[in-house]
Image (cartoon, rainbow, N blue to C red; front, top):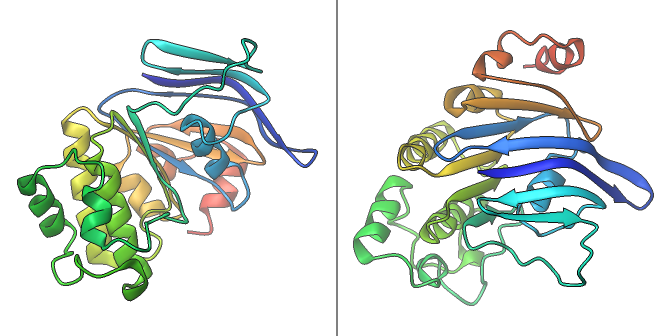
Length: 232
């Protein structure tokens, strides 16, 4: 399980996350929803060890790290956790195919499956600057999947995709889930959150306001959650 307990994170004197708890079980999908600036991306960064919190504990399976980290070492990102950032961070001097296969962990058959699943055949051998944002998003997702992580963290991975592409991503995430992968996805697409999720968490101003099953999207109990969802 990927777990974070009592996580607090500051940025320039402001509290970005305050006493946040989250548990992510293998073979489940968790959607993080909430307004911009609520702390969703920061939480993913903390879970991936891209950022260290001021306080709290992060556990990845049998390894646990408490913060502030007292033994002087720097916790390294776990090989079982992969994250797709909003910025994507594709290597500009490599084609999309080369970006996806750079880890050396993916077979030709697995690559062909991803190319087909995400409709990348016509642009897979182009460089990032020769492709659209939506095409780069699909390639970045494929690259993360190619790492074969136990935990996959996604930050607005569908923001530039059309309806058919979102559905293709949803189906593939469900396939990964069935294979035991745990997925945490930040999304502003509420229908997408409802479509794929076992757990939905609403975050606002650095705090978890409400959590529940996908039914939370249609039947929130908290007034602030309802106020946010009324816009959709």
